[in-house]
Image (tube, rainbow, N blue to C red):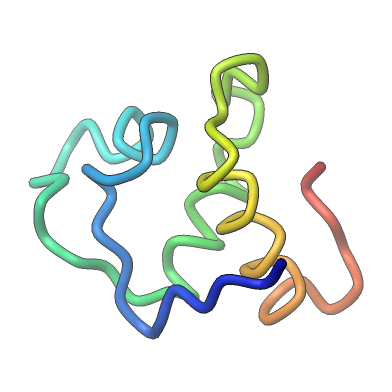
Length: 73
């Protein structure tokens, strides 16, 4: 099932992404391409065992859109 998240993503809605934006307001929406870049740059900090199904879907969609064939998972 594909779930379209849109152009802006609110980090507070995704536990691991919320942790990655420790230096900004997690309630402020971020452009989807910037979110992908955050995951990509900080992937070693993501606790894959604590990713929710919804966050996994987000990561997969971002990878399809911005990853140019590269998958984080």
